[in-house]
Image (cartoon, rainbow, N blue to C red):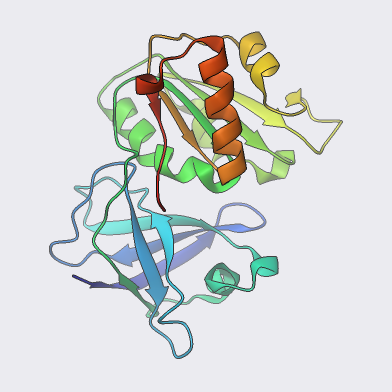
Length: 222
């Protein structure tokens, strides 16, 4: 089944990331962390669907997305900065393996933060504390919703910056050595999201440290 989501408002979050607030059609139900395949309802774009994560609470009257624009990819995200109220998306049934498995360690790279926004917001509303967010980006200005993570009760954020030597955060590549230095608790859920190579590398690193496979939550097949 497909749904039509009409854009109500767009706003920039970083130099290349945007929040899109859309009307929520009846029956468009999802769990925090899940995504939908969407395509712009415009000539030439209806077959260019991509997965996007809902970052709003499932009970909200609107549905909200945080989307990073990739002009170099020559795809639908290139259009995001020009999307206007009244534009429409055609969306599939929400799905996805990343859902709320309880308090844990959330490891994201870039736009891979999006499935964790709704889950961490839910934990904050429910008074669940003890989450750790390890968020890897190229530069400081790439960090999506940094103010939110810095102020959110129950979340300890750790920022890892790879391409900006003068960062005040951890500098370098997020790998096994850095994970061990940051400190991890092996008996809790580990949520991983980001580019495929990042997810594979972090999964392997966690397993090599001794984290059981059953404790690792990733998206498969999207």
